[in-house]
Image 1 (tube, rainbow, N blue to C red):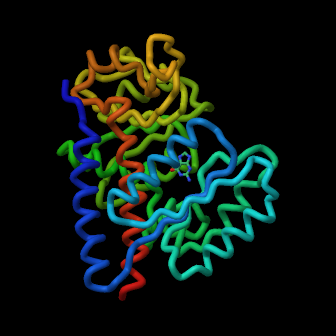
Image 2 (cartoon, rainbow, N blue to C red; image 1 turned 180 degrees about the horizontal axis):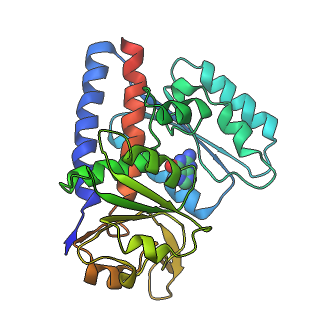
Length: 290
Ligand code: GUN
């Protein structure tokens, strides 16, 4: 059984991104700038946003942090996004989700200019991805594709089962995997699927993105299948320094006994999400130079 090392791939890609960022600065005087908006103090969101900001700085980019209280009026958020859209110095805008209750996340995300939508969440970018036009790809699905390439897998003609139909991961990933360039046959399972194991047992690759630990267990896998675990769940653990431990959506021990390769949590898909965000931010800033 092989562990797919997302940390290593992320480090390689971030090195490449940092070099291109330095060149853009030296040749064109452009420093890619990402505006990160965090509303409220959800602990997981705070830690994601902090990691995104740190990664920007490490890659030589600017991070513009905007942290607002949970009770900020929705109109104020939309105005903030509009002013960032108009700000020449800003290349990427990210609104950390989920937003607090009472704020219409769709209205806020839809206000982001598609040219600065480095998360790839706006209808314009989602639609472009669906029909294969140039766009910002959503970061986690894009990271999963990179990980699969890095692991040396050729998915052409292979059967990939994706579990979870979120707009952020499952749905876009199903679209990307079925593009001609990847050429996989994709089954998208979700809460309405009657017998998920009947599908996973005939899958060459299972991607699990449900946000529920234990969604996938070893008895649901074909011998030698590959498991890509997108889950990042905080599970209480009094023996851990922070009082919790991170767990994926797959039951690691039982899956590792049957799979030929698996992504660990942490250290699998997670580091790629932020890396692909840097990638999109660099891409956005590079467009300015041409
Ligand atoms: N919340 C969970 N994942 C993401 C992500 O990739 N981008 C944003 N903006 N919010 C998230």
